[in-house]
Length: 356
Image (cartoon, rainbow, N blue to C red; front, side, top):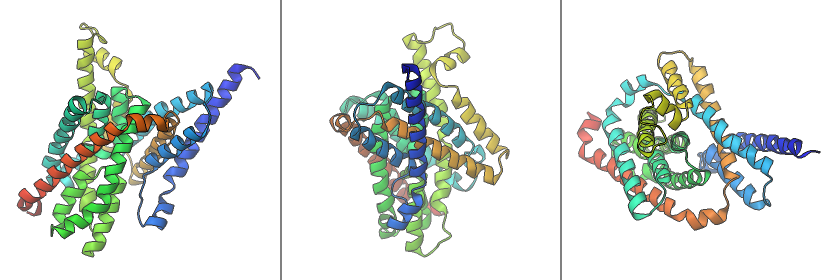
């Protein structure tokens, strides 16, 4: 067998394996609920962990296989982001969670300010890692990290470190917040603001809300998820903001010529699939997709994210995580704590506004 054909087969095998790991990880929700009563690890994060374990258990991977995992980590990620755009809606900002917008916007600024300042000046991690941790903490965990990673051109290592940091503290918040909030005697409205703005992943918010429903004896309570929906929609604006920031940086560094048009700068400095992501959100806003269509896009996006992160995991060695990953974890903890403090303080200081 000639080398080109062998490399092609290895690449195909890698794509199939990443897709299979992603599908199995995403379908693990039922098993996790049966074992733990809730989803403990989201599909994308589980796929990342599984592929990292496989990568470290195997000898050096052949070049064709590595090319296949790279294809998954980039192409599947792009398609997943585009599909996710179809589940978002500008109109939702005017819906149930609109009252939480001031806190959501405040937390976005808090998260990025803390992540960039602490990451750059104190922990000396890369700017990309700081951006991913900041975005994952203030918006929606893995989905925000996946989206921003393509805009800032983050490495597989930076993505993995940010995902690990987000997962650890997100899981802690999902388990603890329902009991802390109820123990403090906060109202359901206050819980909605805290859980909806200070727990990252949507599945984690859903899990925390389910626990809180049991505590208050109201199975129909949906406040936290309503706030989380509005928060997730802000990913559109955060993604566009970082696109403009990176475009401006490209002009200053010479990556884009000063005479280039705005469109030329954008084309050079960020993936155009972000336009497709925004276009899908617009289509959903105007009602182009049915309710079933939105659900299908949501599922497709999660499967694609899981397969993409399986590809990322095949590039990470545990030795590198333990030698270089402690600082990103610390950054994730500091950023998470600051956003949590912001949300709890808002719930206390503006209780009348929340419950009014």
